[in-house]
Length: 149
Image (tube, rainbow, N blue to C red; front, side, top):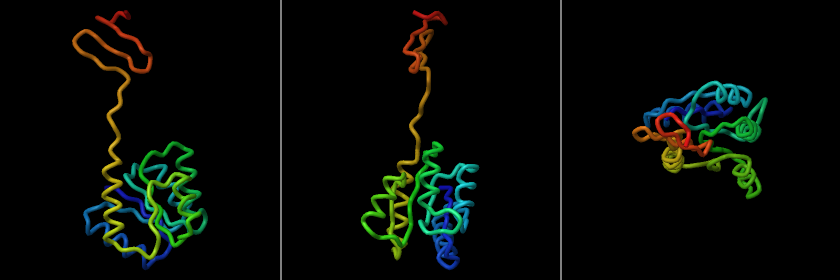
């Protein structure tokens, strides 16, 4: 998976990057919310791992903004904010999963594997064809030999 990690704690960030690369993931790491938002908007990541409490723009704002902008990739909040209200808010604002620090790497890696199973987008097309027949799924029309019937 291609993962963006947004974590401002240098020691923890280095450790997470090391563990993810050990699992054969490709990882970009940023240390503030503005960079996280920029990288996520301009790169096709399979997964974003966002810390809630980061400088410049917090992880929840990054999550909300990206969802508002149509980002459909997986987002995992990885944060020390452990109150029930925080977990509910994180999920309601668009996170697909929420892991509380301190955490076990085995659990984080299992959650990443679970999210990776959901990342694959279903094949979508506007038109299905068979022989000289075509069905436009958006326009609810059928053509035979190129002529609408």
